Image (cartoon, rainbow, N blue to C red; front, side, top):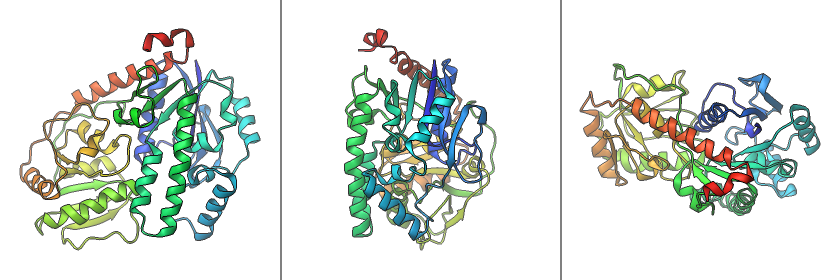
Length: 390
C-alpha cells in the first residue's frame, strides 16, 4: 500500500516541536506496518527534508505568526478572508492547486492520502478528494481556537480566533466525515470530533524516540525545568498559569529554568526563574532538573512533553490536562490542578533526589499500542474488512 502523507511542514530531522515528534512517530509506525509513505508539504527555510527521496517539497515557508512582520500578518489575514480559508491554511497557499495536483501525479501512484492535521488538508482540500483518506487529528482545533479567543489580549485577536474556530469546526467535521478512519492523539478527542465509534477512529499512543531511553545517572543543575514553544497560544496559557498561580507559592531559592521560543513580554518576578532561550540538547536540558512541571491547562491532543518525561523516568508534577492521551501514569508523577498543592509537590519532589523510574516499560507499552492502532487504521482503508471493526 502506497500512502501520501500530506502535512504543512515536512520532517527535517530536527524534531524541534511536539508536532515534529508526533509526525516522525506516526510516519515510522506506518512504515513498520509495511506501507510505502511519501511525504508532501513545505520545508522550513534553510532546512532540507530528512528523507528527500521520499519527500515532495512544494517550496520553503516559515509559518510562524510570532516574529512575522506586520505586513506579512496582514497579507495572511487578507488571503484568509478573501479565500474563505482558515488563517493557518491560508499561509500555505503560496502555490496553486494545479502545482500541488501535478506534484502528486509525478510522485504517485498512491492508494490513499494521510491528511496530517487540518492546515494542509484545508488549504488544498479539493486536490486531496480523489482518493480514500486517513485523517490524523493532532488536536480538536476548533476547541483550541475557542480557548485562544477567550484568552486573547485584544478585540482584534479575539475576533480572528472566533472566526478560526467557526471555520475549523466545519472543516474538521468535513474531514472526519470523508475519512475512512480517524486517528486522534487523545482518547477524549474522538468524542469531541464526533467519531467515538471504534469503527471510525482510535487514539494513537505515541513515543518520542524509536528506542527506549536507558536509565542512567544524571547531574542535577536546577530544581525544575520546562521546555516548549511558548509562542503557541495553548502552551502560553499553561505557562501563564504556572508563572502566575504556582510560582508565587514556591520559595525564593527554588531554581526554575524555562527553555524554548518565548514572546518578548514573558517574565516573572520570582528570583529563581530563568529564561534560557533555545537549548542545543532538549533531552539533556530536562534531565538536568530534579523535577519536571507538566503544566498544560488548554488545548487538546496529547502532550509530547509528558510522554518524553515518562519515557525518561523523570519525577514530575502534572495538571490533569497534561495527562490527556496517557493511559498509564508512573508512580513518580503527582497529579493536581490546585496551584498551592502543585507548588508543594514540586518542592517535595526536588528535595528527594533518586526517585527516577525506569521508563523502558512505558516506552515498550506505548510502541506496541501505537503499532496496533496504526494497523487497525490501515485495515480500515479496505472496505471489505471494515465490518471487523464495527
